[in-house]
Length: 483
Image 1 (cartoon, rainbow, N blue to C red):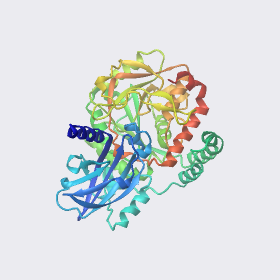
Image 2: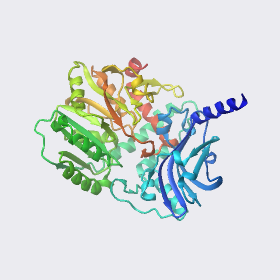
Image 3: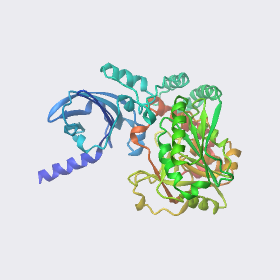
Image 4: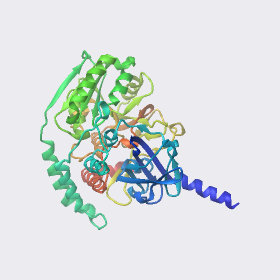
């Protein structure tokens, strides 16, 4: 009986403790890996993560960073329950399957991890974007060679953005433990942040359009797809689009929002067109505009009446999906935006509509809540089309004229957060409705290891600041549509 109780406790602990290794590189007897560790209920720190090989403890040194994407994916209580890491393990010999990680009294054998072998450390560090300088220092401290890579995994050194550093400094003065923190953000922090951001948005606004293949005379839909950091998804999308009959009447516009990658992406684009012979446009921005700015730039080159805003890491699982999606849109007389159902590779829901939900810790801010996130899609009885108060900007179908009339995404949401819900509110305020297609299902290939923006304490404060901006702008309307 006691053994059964112990096993039950151990099984429950195993369900609550999580660890994932995504990339591994080796140099001599040193193993370098990228991953994350989490606990569904308890705080977790780097001292709790250990490694061993064949029963012998292995020396491990960690560079850690926040992983807000994991926190959201598993709906963890707070960001202290999780951390991302680059681990350097010395003295590893023989088969890596013999390596064992451990935290929260749970073993995580390397043999059960599904990781990718990186070409070198540069490929690993390419997935630690904003704190890359610190990560490089950490690696060099161990006397390891970072190396360089080519193609989609190229290591891009992103030096600290002076404007972002100024915003960080402003946010460091915000004490969230004190009463009136949101009022301080609204009255003191936001004006300074927006002043910096407006000035940044006004710099180097040039762009260049490149066209690959013949232009489509009267496209049924224009698809705008921003690119930042990773651009290898272009290959998967264009391979899919080229074999889909309906996509032959669609205008595809990629927007590179990453000037450091212009040379590589132009070379890649030429090769992809030669391979698939599928026509597309490529807009090259002279500066990083962010999600809102990249989409707004792309829409400037749109020629179709219908507009689809699509993330680069979204793939359909069948042909003719866009034709069916478009037919649903055109059958709705009062539609402003039609979203889609997005699923992870394991067919659990990433998005099937969003709700405005007031934050219990910070009343007065409404967060974008995904009510079905993580549930197997086949267990949720989604209607073919249903109304929603909000939908993700990862996949939005709407009229081009409406997008332009509403001036598109609001670029004053600094470094992301709430642009999509803000656009939905613009549409509702315009007298139209938000719908989601339950039958249009697309795979969202976002990997938890590939969040290219660090989400530390300052980023959480920035999310709150953006939330305050949205609340100040739309409070009465949100209160009318929120759950």
